[in-house]
Image 1: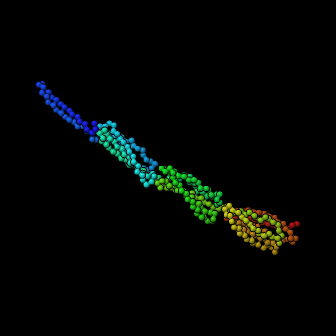
Image 2: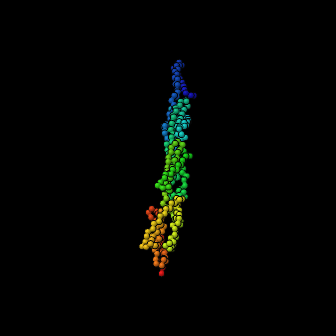
Image 3: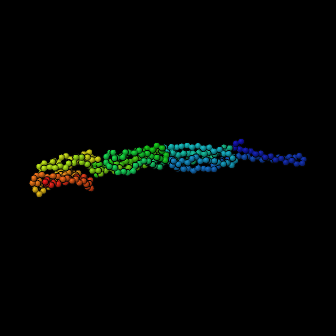
Amino acid sequence: MSGQLYVDRLWTATDNCGNTATGQQTISVGDNTPPVFTVTPSDLTVECSAVPPVANVTATDNCDVNVTVTYNEVKTNGTCTDSYVLTRTWVAIDNCDNANTHVQKVTVRDTTKPVLVGVPADVTAECGAINIPTVPTVTATDNCDLSVTVSFVETTIDGGCPDSYSIIRRWTATDNCGNSTSAEQTISVGDNTPPEFTNVPNNVTVECDAIPGAGTIVATDNCDNAVAVSYNEVITPGTCENQYTITRTGSLLTIAIMQIRRFKRSRFAIRSHQYWSVFPAMSLLIVDRIMYRQLQ
């Protein structure tokens, strides 16, 4: 029976002479009350990584002790992959087809930025390609996107000289809903190593009329492939015509100081001493002090 139930009640009265009378009552029983949900999940707005599971929704009825509850879910896409709306619908029906419906809307969004993994710390490096660290592989994780895009840009900022500069390396991670995060590494490149001479003149013993030429001094550098070497020579007179000092100076070092003194017999010997020191300006100084004494 569905929807309506009829109950007929009949009464009969009989006296002692067999006379009878009847009475009748008809009760129409119906079920017009829909079931009632025991749980009604409310609307929610959540991150894409925190979508709640489907609630266990049941219903009770004034007559039906075993109400049927059906469930359906519809997904409506939003502006990006991890932005959408879930419409969850429950329908409770009793055995007289009285129905009750509950709808929950779960609005899903992605507002969380990715997290970069493996970004190196700032460093200081000596000039020269071999000293500059290679670009590492930087990845990213995300609360929803399993394949985050990581882009890379490198910028060079000039410093006070050609071999002094900064390298700015920037990584940017972007998920499929446009959330992005960036991180940088700064590599400060400098040149703190002085050049080195390759052919400093040897100590010599000479007559006053056979002073050697200055020669060509060459220098190498860890970064500069064309080191500039300047040269200057100053003659300082002594106590006589053939006694004087020649000071030969390069931009990187003092090449030699030669004291030449002529004696009566025009013979002399040379005693040489070398001194090395590093000045604050990182110029290398080499001094040859050549002292003369008369041969016996």
